[in-house]
Image 1 (cartoon, one colour):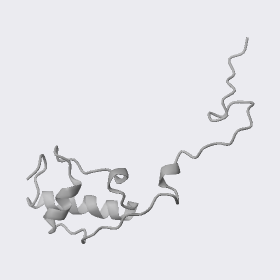
Image 2: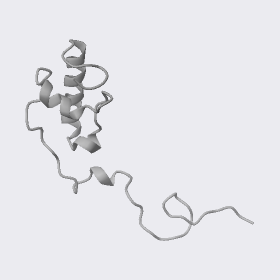
Image 3: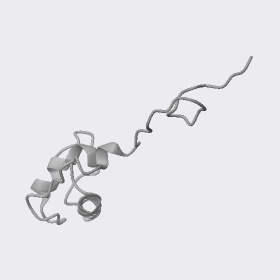
Image 4: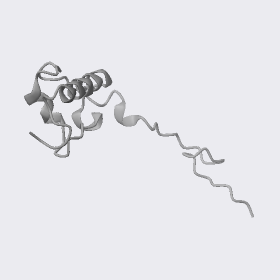
Length: 92
């Protein structure tokens, strides 16, 4: 008895199917969303849209921003928290 699987996605032997990309959701199909306002630490009203009720920064999948804009967003939120313009936990 052999324990070989024939599933082509996990690299098994057999099956001639194509492999799906595990990064498909970040491909060319996905439209890039640009920020409506500048991502600055002073723009508290706009930054607070991207913070959940618990105080967590929303993910890139949820915001739709590119990686570069998502990093700018998180840095602006963190700096605004550091200088006490935004709370670390909860909504204002």
